[in-house]
Length: 290
Image (cartoon, rainbow, N blue to C red; front, side, top):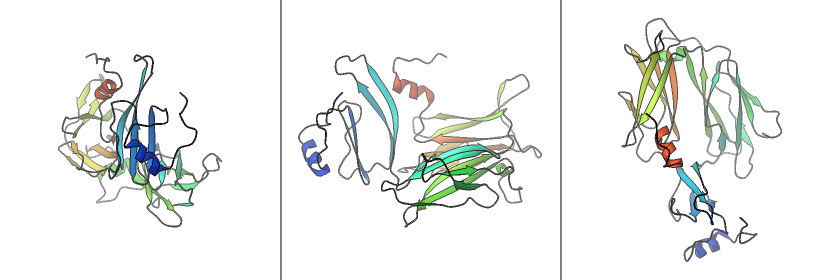
């Protein structure tokens, strides 16, 4: 589809025009960013226009594009909108001992950035030589985790949370990449999450027995909310009202008094949408087969 104009008007003039009629230059979807305000202007009924004093620090929207001549031709995408002074990638990542992870960051005005080194013993960041990642870094995980000491949570035996900070050199708000360094881990222990209608998330810890049967982990289990604005109580994570958090990190560690590998970590995207609900959003005709 060709746009109606080749050059956009001034932002203020465009808003005045939008007060009288929907005008999206001929495009089905139009995103306009003006500091803290995001205006979402669509030529369809699924997403309302946001403007004025409505702030959109983080959210997810379902974008639906339809063919003008054939209503049966539909494409959908679940899109996250994030407001950051420093854009980073990835927001969160999990790496094995001794492995590497590419890190990227940038500001809207292309300002110089300063990367801080991780805490001692938890790896290092070095400049990325790839020209396609001009201000990026390479994180190299340690080959072994620091020794567990009295007072540490039990999950420190097999996992460490490594925050990597990047900020504008001239000053400004920093951004943090949450790196999870995972040591030796049993694949027979895992976490699962199920959302509720109230917005909370039930997290369960499972294991596989010798016959491959799925069983809940019983006995002493240490539950830890590694990152999250909400609360974790009785295996239920409840997001904080009004929070713009994009994910929470939960760890469960089975304590048998001797093992260090019976744990799992769950990166919980927020707001959480179950696979079943996500499938229905993308295609309401898809039915889950029990």
